[in-house]
Length: 153
Image (cartoon, rainbow, N blue to C red; front, side, top):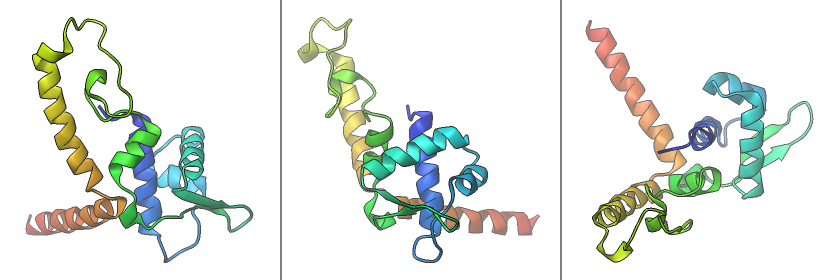
C-alpha cells in the first residue's frame, strides 16, 4: 500500500512538474493549498526530496521549490522508495528492504511469497516506467475526457 507520505510526494512533484520550465519556484503554501497537503508534512517531504537531488530550493520573496531533474526522469519507484520504503507487499520479497517474515517457517516453499514476488515484479515494472511527467500527461487526458462527458449531458 502506498503511504500517505509517498502519495503527497507524488502530488507535490506533479504540481511542480506542471510549472516546469514555465514559471519560477513554487512556495510550500501554494503546493499545500492546491494539492490539499498539510503544510508541515509537505515541508518535511520536500526537504527529503531535495536531499535526494530531485528538488532544488530558492530563498527569498520569489523563492520556493523547483524540480532539479526533468520530470520525465523522475520515476515513481524512486519517489516511493525515497518517501515510503519498499514497493513489495511483504518484506521477504523486497529488493531494498528485505526482512524475513516472522511467521514464515520456510521461504522456499511459501506459496504467498511466490505470488508476492510476481506482484512485486509487475509493480516495479510499472512504477519504474512511469514518470512524474507521465502523470501530468494522464491528468490532462483525464481532464479532457471529463469535459467531453460533462458537455454531453
